[in-house]
Length: 465
Image 1 (cartoon, rainbow, N blue to C red):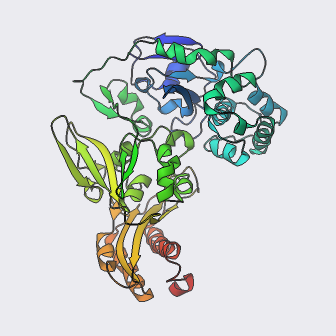
Image 2 (cartoon, helix red, strand yellow; image 1 turned 120 degrees about the horizontal axis):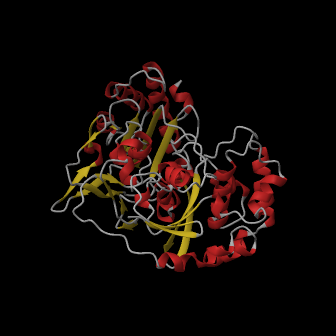
């Protein structure tokens, strides 16, 4: 039985936990400012704010209500566009009007929500960061120029660098961005009833739900669901990094610890879905999904990662490269969950390259994706791990290619031989994302791109011509 704040009111009821928030808002609550469009998290017309009280503060993020089941919002503050409206336009809405950023208006509510989330969380009034925060908000009328002008206006109008996280909500109220009632939300959430734990409940496990509710939203209305209650964590000790399975993709992307290990991770992970999806989708869910082109699978296969898998009575470890059994099949028994993933490293920063080729650079599924990590000693490959996606039924670890390169001195002829061996390990199919020939060419080019990026002191592009 979910209990949460919906805009200015408490909701405590018997709503179906498998119903997505979008349908609950529009059909049951008649709150129709939140728009229905793609139902895949690809357009952000359905964005709402989701607020949680964490470590003594309210934290808000923009989420896709079309993919968010009610079972995941207990104890939260859900804010639709109606929850931001007042008697007059607020500062965000006025900026959009001033700069001609509205035409048909269908996408406007989602844009207002995304801009508001940026203003609630950003540490500085950076237009570039504001544009990033709107990644995934589609607008087919304006050409985006008016929206960008509105972001410039807001960043000039409000200096976020002088607003501390603990006072941000009050500052936004004073600036006319948030309504006054936001100041009382934390106390009102604390007064909501506790959730009821059903320890013996059986059903489909749901973490973020960003794939499940694209594929099976109707079926899940009548299916028992178990919402995974785990916390996010990233820890590093003695050259081993451990990440809990419940950690969200954007938490990984923004982690200072991981940015120290992988200086490019923030940019690399911008190629993975939209900001709103990254804030909801989890590491464990992405791996269990077992997509042959799963971006996180590629990243962690290239780190030779290990999984800790647990049940009520047992715990075991499985190498990620052995976790994927066949198309959409994984080594996970009934009652088991991934608890965490870990990898070891010998140097920091880790020499790792991530590459993804898709029809669109951002917000798209890969045609082929790949990652490679290497360490070099005395001009030899001390360790090398290579992953490829989109070229087999599973996320593929290039075992033969890696074994061939291990402990050998880096040389052009050696790398060319490795390219040939890699071609024997893949089995791509022609599909909407490319022909067999195209994918085989991409594999070659991506491997060369990894080598050029990771050890330019040894190779150049001309060597492969």
